[in-house]
Amino acid sequence: MGGLANLLLSSISRLVMLLSERATRRLARGLAWLIFGLFGYRRAVIAQNLEASFPELGLAERRTLSRQVGQHLVLTFLEFLRIPRYAARNFDNVECLGLEHYEAAFAKGKGVLCLAGHLGSFEMTAAAVARLLRPNKSWLIVKPLPGGVDRFVVSVRRRGGTDVIPAKGALKSVFWALKRQELVAFVLDQHAPGDTGVPVQFFGRAAQGLVALAVVAERTGAPVIAASAHRRPDGTHLLVLHPEIPFEAQADRAQTLQQMTQVYTRVIERAIRAHPEQWFWSHRRWKPALRPSKPA
Image (cartoon, rainbow, N blue to C red; front, side):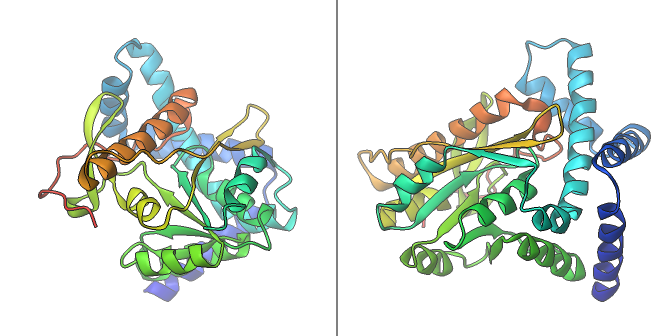
């Protein structure tokens, strides 16, 4: 079954790569209407998340935003399938600003930690920054997907230039990457269950934030920079690397890790608020902790 999934996705990817950019956007609009409109996939989750996060918006505004979110999510998936095509053109559809912030962090000699989220065409822009930073290697921490789907996704990421570290047991690999002066990206905008998370406020509501980035920053002293991306009206993409986020030690370790995870969460929230139509609102981000958290 895994081999069949890999073959099917590879075939779909080859077909999607044949499309023009205009045709790809049209296909995204049609598929979004089908998936989120006709079949209503995660439509209620998106609506609830938007209502709670933007209470100042009227119903009509939120419905418009919800449609934009659906179209963005489908287009982002199609762009992921097209990564080999964009890589062959050296990602000429992505503009990067703030490279000097990466260079300043890299000059500290401790490797670089990157704070990221599911904003904009996050897979494609991750591949673009990986290509941009060569010969220095960059890694993305990810949760493996089932069987053949994971093989396909990893192959596309690697063809684009992104190497991956499985999330389970990732710390050892992360420490080695930092020792080799490499960049490691942590995606911090999803629910962190159990002892992987600490309480944070996200869009004014209680959530669980992944504590791993704060743990690694504390242990290694590696600088943390943020990366945010969004799709522009002309279909191109802007990727911004931001200045280093200062590490703020508190009275005790647990408080430090919680405070820094909150700081990182605020950075992500600000980026999402600037382009709310381009975030992963179909994700069930606000969940209670399953058990008390214990920082690593």
